[in-house]
Length: 444
Image (tube, rainbow, N blue to C red; front, side, top):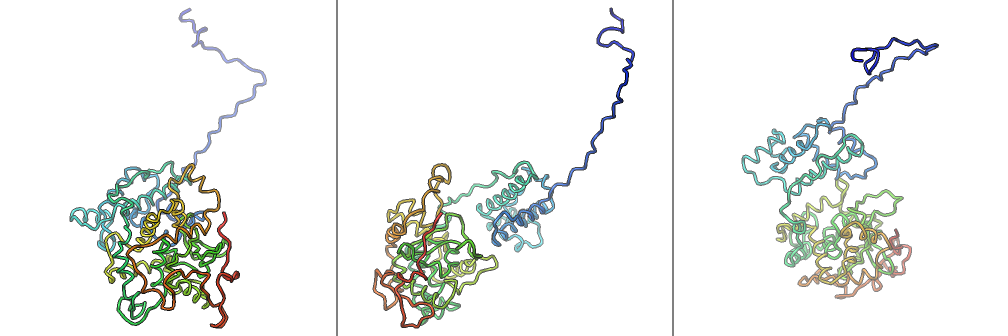
């Protein structure tokens, strides 16, 4: 009944004695260790660059150093990784949008934020391009992705941040116009100059044929990237399946290589265009082979970044200026655009063009990617048929043909070269010199 404390859910009972009861030990409360301090941006940056699982060149490292300089100037290098949120990333993006190019040189006494503000207030026009801004943000995303993979943060807060680039990717670099090509190959370097050093732009009696002479010509008729050409070894000029060709690759995996490839699809064989035969390229190769030199263009030193193209790229900009061929949005890479257009004009099938240029297949996923992994690629004879159709109407290079060479069709079976170590009178047909020239095609 009500008020009876002996029943109901709130009943009070006397303790009941239990025979031989085992005393209950008190529950042990685990000691809470203090949380380990989180990583700082500086620590993540250093760990990222030293990660042995990532193949990174000195040039790539220097690009990330640029990112570190900018981030340090905006956030501070020792900002805790946990303190980098979406708002911080937007803050960085806002600074980049008005940051002058070379801010540490222009405003050496200002922070990145102050330099950005100064440029905005004064209406400075030479600020970072959309491509540069997006490049910085892409590198930041890569660093934060690394931190996510290592378990230091849960998500990439910089994902999707960038600016709209008003220039379409296709319009960033243009092919050379025919008139520009004429000006390039009519310059004193190709007509007669003092020398191919400081006197390359001064008319004179010399016609040197070294790197500065050959590299633009090879680029025009192969579409190769600048560093792919500059880093060539003499051994990369080969006969494969009876076809004279250039091997673009790192070489045997057992050897240390000083070469770089942009992508996996960059490795390829390119048949040598008949025009390059006519101009005497194979004679130059034979001369380099006889001399015992390893590099095809031994006059080109590698830069501190490990790339053979760095110094040549800067020189070529000066060369086009002095030749009167410089135009907005054209540079050495414009040769590659010329080559791609020439393949289109010749009606070369898309996949054959990709194989010749070392371009990755469009799409890059699904059935396209799976299909690309099958087979060994096109025969060199098929690629040669495509290369022979590449032409540049309106461009006459007859003045570059050696005086003792017929005007066309001087292909490898008709050429001879001197075997290294033999006298000048001992020559052998290159097509039969198996030990020096013949190799097997790429296998996968």
